[in-house]
Amino acid sequence: MAPNNPLIDSCDGHPAGTGFDNLIILSRADPIICGHSTETRNLAEAAIAKGVSQVRVVSYPLDVLEASELPLKPLDSVADYAPGIKVDRPDPVGDYKVLDGRLGYGISGHLIDLLISLPGRTAVMNLYLVPHGQMVMQAVETVRRMGGVEVPLTIAEAVGSDITNVVGNAVATGRFGAAALVLQNFLDHDLPVAVSDFTRELIVAAGRQVDEQLNTRFADQLTARVQISYPAIDTTAYLQPSLTDAQQSDLLARRGLVRDGYLLFLSRLAKAKGVADLIQAYRSSDFHGRLPLAVCGTGPDEQSLRQLAGDDKSIRFFNDVGDLDKVALMAGCHAYCLPSKPRPEFTETFGIAVAEAMLSGGIGPVITTRTGGIPEATGDHCLYHAAGDIAGLTARLNEVASMSDAARAGLSRRARDYCLRFDRTTILANLLAPSGLRTAA
Image (cartoon, rainbow, N blue to C red):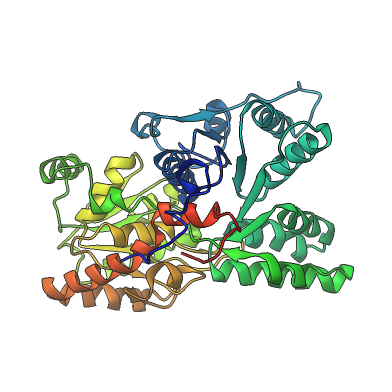
């Protein structure tokens, strides 16, 4: 069970002891397919449940998302946010003469409007430092200089792509000023957090590289201040699903699947997720021709993966998976596979989908790798193979194929018990604790 946390039940005169009347979250929110869009929803709904008066999610206009290359859920499959949460999608400011920054200008201005108008004490959290950290701190500094408004608590959550993509690319190409810009912005927040210990180590290492070039002290400051806050998950969605057994069976049947009768990959279709490795390993495994492989998600590699699968009817692609479908698919699979591997553009820094699959229960164990922060998400209650080792992945698939139902169920049960620590209520309480984050979840 999740450890007792006195922060959740504390009382300091504010709603539910959070110390805040308002919470603003700036992120790449739904309908983007991303674990951190799910985390945004979870934190927002946990705040509403604990009595925070005003919860606002600030994100991007839908037409901007639709014109981007980001993987998106079908709009009609996105579940409504809990009552009381308002999603703001401010329009860009400026016209064609502004070559870049119109969205950031519009979002920062909107944040200022919110900070001026919302009564009481406010916390502002951003997921993804680039560009959200800059947007938040620009707005907060403006409010601070204006005076007359209580300055909000600022929380910045650094995710993998902030470091492995943005800072990593800046350092690799000798653009240390750009790397310094991101790190300093991170430290400008009141509470800088990382989604895993692995991510924290990456951040400190990046700071050390910048220090060596610019004679700065980022590594020491990051070591002293960055704390760990694991991604917030709605555990009740998996422990007490709103779907009945009959509804789950119906959702699976619409896709030609039956409970405990398929292998599952559900994440972004990108090289770092190892889907091509999974397809090849599956074809060599004892499952091929016995249970289908359901590949669920969208992303830049969707077409190339479909070409790799060819006309193999045992491999089925679904790019229209909504929130309820995800719960049903994860709970009903014979095994969930995420053969993630490190890539220059992305390294798994936690593995939200892995934790969600473990929370879904059932008798479907997880097969994954030790890439990045994944072991922090699994607690080692899974089957590992070396990243990129197709033969090793085949061996793990064959191991599951020969496991008894009791052995699979036992592994799945231990995994679920471990992942209860990522419950969104505990994560939120720690983030908004009066003295700042005291413990990792």
